[in-house]
Length: 253
Image (cartoon, rainbow, N blue to C red; front, side, top):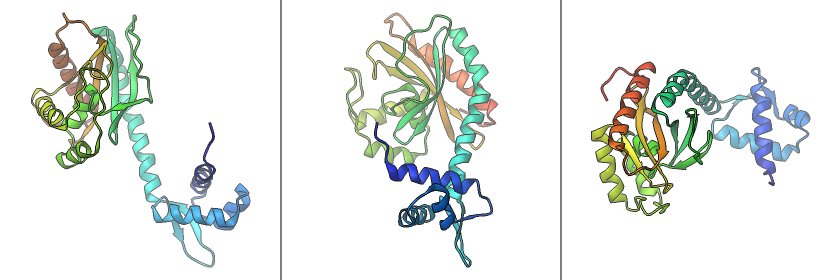
C-alpha cells in the first residue's frame, strides 16, 4: 500500500513537536526531519490554523503542541480508561450468557469496536476490535444513535446513505426514525439480521458521568427462530445500566 508522503510528514512533525514542550523552530524541524523548508512551513501553518500546534512569536517562531491535539489524546486516553473499567465485567457477562459480547463507540456515522469478549465455544463473527460498521444497521449503532443528542442524531440521519446489506436491512430514513423511537422506549436495540443474514444482535447504551451516551454493549449470536431476542435485549439493557453506574452515571435510563 502506498502511503501519502504529506500525511507521513505531518505525523512526524506532530511527534517531534510533542517532544519539545519548550517549543521548536521551523529550522529545527527541517534539520531533524530532513524536510524542505517550504514543505515543512506549509504543514506547520496548516497545523497552527487547525489548533494542532501553537505558535509562540518572538525573534523566531516556536511551535508547541496545540489544544486540538491535546483533546484528541485525552479522548483516546478516556476510551482506554473505559475499556479497562468494563473489561472484567463484560468478560464475565460473555461467559454467563454464552455469547460474544462487544463494546463499541460512535465514530461519525459508524461504530467502532473497542472490545470483544467470547465464551469458551465462540461463534465466528466478522467484527473484530478496531473494525467499523454502519451505525444504522447494528444494534450497537442504533442503541447509541437513539440516545444521542437530537440535533446531532438528525444531522447524522440526514447525511447517511442507507445501503442494503441483507433483505432485513432498514433502507428508509422514516423507518430508521421509527425504530429509534422504539429503542428509546425499550432501552435496547436489535440488529435483526440487518448486517449479516445469519447473525442477530441485541445492544444497549452505556452512559457516562455527564449523562451523555458513551457507547454501547451488544451480544451477538447465530440467528435462531426459537430464541427470544426481546428477552436478550432486556438482559443486555440491565448489564448496560450496571456498566453505566460503574462509569459514574447517576441518572435513570
